[in-house]
Image (tube, rainbow, N blue to C red; front, top):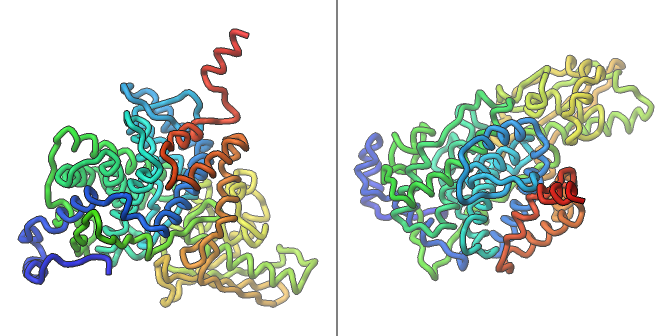
Length: 500
């Protein structure tokens, strides 16, 4: 459904040489390079445009919110001391501040993932954060600015490449254990998107993919730390830099997607397939048409959303039966969740650990009836009621609860000191690709996030611009809007104020 084999003979040769895929004459990498070069705006379908505009709006919102985080400010300070370039791109939420495009892509990519509020796909990755910052940073520097439809095409090529690569591994379908997926497929998405935007040829696109692959990979050990958002920023930057290097004729291995020692190094069960041939008039079936996106209601690891919904339901049952009950009467909380070491954090001490803690998100939802941006503040994390409740949580890992965002569930059992039991189960949370946020709720999320940085009229301007991207011939207002900050004055405004 998602690919075609070039020939049965090629398939036979792959089977005969499992450790030496180079026996096939550049089938897989060549097909990707051809697809990146050949896909055009006529291949975009209405559903792909609709879904990708939702992704873009959501990513811009969480990115703006992320510009207030310590990790964003740290990488911005570091990037400002780098050498300047003739062409600069705007830093989101920082009026008057621009950086060379690859560094703008880096810091804006960090902002998107700084609170783990960005979208999630299946097989598991955060697809938009590595692509959109790179595309916008590059688009701003082009002498002829792309149309909105051209921007959508580049963005979707970057999403598509990630989706295809993830489907070459069964391991990739599970919650990751070794490599953080945005650092692996995200950089390949960034390079494909920027190669498309610059109009690279098939051969140049192959070179760019090869160069980018050497920037791929980051360990899951840095999940739940301030370093994790850097994975997204590095992916955005690495892909854009690879495209720039390919444009300067730098070469890489032309079989990078074919080889076990190439992209296959990241997945032990990697079995690549060539893409179908793309012609100007052919129909192209995008992965995004068949696999929707999960968009989060609060800033935490995706697995936390099953836990929160189950806990909120159990809380409602408890309070419905005992309206005046004190939640301190809870004696024991049992969570039945998949095995996943990096989100089993009984007593988190930082906001990043809390965003990756089954226990923390469960107790917050039980105490407050919701999990929000504010839930991860120091004042909320240090509540004595929360700390006491965390000690009552026990995890169980049923064998039928698979470590996959497609298959997992959460069951909760809340036992009181009076011996009563309240249970709930969440199979699909609201915001999951099987139960996507309504358009109204997605826009509400964007407004809430963006309004922390932007004035109301600028927020509405972004909503309008994204909604009309497919008909807009000039989308330069999009990155101009992202440059504002209602709490900071543009340097020109500061100068005028000083002269007044």
